[in-house]
Structures are given as structure tokens and as C-alpha cells.
Image (cartoon, rainbow, N blue to C red; front, top):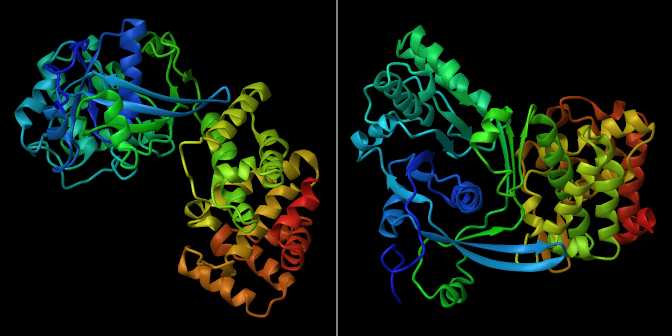
Length: 480
């Protein structure tokens, strides 16, 4: 089988380099680069991507061996119908390792057409390291590397206002743009780069907060031979992803005009405030995940898809999403309902086996951030408690009791202090004692949740029902 490169395939285009991308991993290639490919193809974007490897070891050599080419395999449901597509992505022009090619890396700042910087250097990547120096080849941290480029560009073009950059961080932290800009300012101060450069950066460049959402399983080891048979060429960088994609960018209309994602029909939103969309994702995707997992598992189910498609547990999932969590959001209801239906379609992806046990890692901190705010808001707005969310918490507490489900051992995985507390509370079997003790654990919640009116009694009742009747029968009482 021939190797994938631009000599062995036809129909590829070499685009002018206009984007610097920090990160060569699966997510950026299946999300950002796939979007650039679509913008080039349908919106006349005409942009090539130079990939910079953020760490000394990485995959740019593999990218260069394939001339930047690779295939994206999208799998999932679209309007209820299964889709399994493969596209050849041709937007990456080359990959650079700044630890070995520092001069070539710095020359990126000298390209007058370079306009965008995009990154995904993991949650730990946006960090200030005071040991970095301007003279390093390169600076260790991602923000340090970026400031090296920015300062060189400022010097090269004598502070020209039209040579600033639009910067989109994709790291999975809230207010990623704010954090990156803060780090950049710290390096400007540490390295004594001066007020004129700082003013150029603040006025000519834009660092924008973003929210990214697409499940990217990565290299499809289990189906790679089938894919190679379809594409009929050797590709070592195939990346699998779900069909759903969402990119929320907190930026003005002027930025949207330069980055024509909307014109290309992509699910990219340019908004004045990213926070409501962050809250929506956490509330309607992560929130249901956290409670459906123990409820489904203790009902004998193993995957998210099984839970959503089950006659009883599926009703529970929809109750939590549409009746309890969705009313706590501040976005237009129609918009939130569409997102919720998209989430359900993603949960039912026939190409993905998402085991609920993997979601139950650190369930208590997850419930605190993903579901507890909704529980409180629901009570505030409706004047009553959301039974589905409380049953989900009862499911987590029951799961943390340990023991067995059939022949399978139940082994909670969480902070040792939490696991030890649950073992101690369950030791005497008194569900009222368990409920009160869990809710009183301020080291988990930051407060005593027994103070929420009616919560202790409701949680105690569900714990008792689960012990007496089992989880599935308890859920049936709630939803049927």
C-alpha cells in the first residue's frame, strides 16, 4: 500500500501559511484543522496551518512524513441517521519542532500574512513559568514561546497595528483567553519588554476566550484496517471524531468576518459572553452524565447509550435534562432545547461505547460542580426540590458503598478522604445517618447541605428505597 503524501494523492491544495497552531494532537486536527479545511473549501478562507510542537517530543515528524495530510473519520448520528464519513484534510503545510528548529520557528513571526494563533496545550499548558527567559531556544512554557514570537513580530514590523494576531486558545479551562493574556502580561513584565510593546500587544492583538466541544477518540485502532481498505493508502495519522462540533468564541463581529466559520456552515458561535454557553455544556452534557452513570450502572446497564435507550432509565435521563436542569439556564429555551436534543443524539452514538464506570471517577466533585448549582437554582425558581438530581446523588452514594453488582466488584475511585468517609458512614447501615453525614461534609461541598430545606429527608428516602427495592424499581416509581 502506498504511503500518504502529496505525490501519491491527487486533489490537494497548498495554502498560504496564515495560521500558527500550537499542538499536533488528535483534537486540534479533528476539530480546528477540519474546520479550516471546510472554510477553505466553501468560504474562500485560503489559509494554511503551520503546526508547532509544544513539547520536545511529539508527532510533527510523522506529520511531515505525510506532507501534513491525514484523514478524519466522522461517526455518529445526524438527524437520527448514522453517518460514517472519511475526509482527507490538506490544510497543514508543515510541522516545526522549536526545540530543534528554533530559527525556523522565529521566522514565523516575519511572515506578513500570518494572522491567527490557535492552541491546545492541555489544561496545564497555559501557565506562567518564571524560569523562562527571552533568550531561551525556546522558552519552556507555551505562553513564553508565544511572547517570543510576538516580540519578534513587533520588532520586525516596527509595531505596525495591522500586523497583530488573532489568538484563539482551545485549552479546556474556563476563561482560557483571559488566563493566556494574563500570562503574556507577566512575561512582558518579567522580561522587561517595555510599555510600547505591551501597548502594541493590547491594541493590535486579540486574545479571545473560547469553548470547544467535540468528542475525539483519536486513532481508531479497532477499525483501522477497515478504514485503510476504504481509503486505499497508508495513513498513520487517521483520527476518529464524533459528528457533533461546537466552538463558542467570545469575540466581536470584526473577528467573525476574518474567520468565516459561520459562512462555511460550521457550528461556530461568536458571542459577547462565553459563560452562558460554558454553563449550558456543563449543565446539559456533564450534569446528566454524572447522575445517569450510577443510576444506570446500578440498574444493570453499562454504557451511556444503553442508559438513554432504556425504557425506564431513558425517561429518567430526559427528566433530569429537560425538566430539572434546562430550566436553570439563562439562554433562550429553544436554543437550550436544541442543544439538549443534540446531546441525546451524541449519547446514542452507535459508534462509541462510553462506559458509565469511566464517568464515575471522582463523582462527588463532579456532582458539586455540574449538578449542585442546578439543584439550588431549581429550588429557588420552582420552590420545590428536583427529585431526579437527588436520586442521582443517592445513586452516587450507593455506588460508593462498594460491594458487587452481579459478578462485578464495585470499586469507587475518588479522593481517599471521601472514600473513607463513605465507608465509615455505611458501616452501620443507617441510611439517615449516611444522608446526613454526606450532606454535612463541608470538605466536599464547601458548606453543610443539610441546610437546604427538605434535602436530607428526600435523600434519605431515596437511599432507603434503593436499599429495599433496588435502583431500577426506585427509578420506575419516579418516572412511570
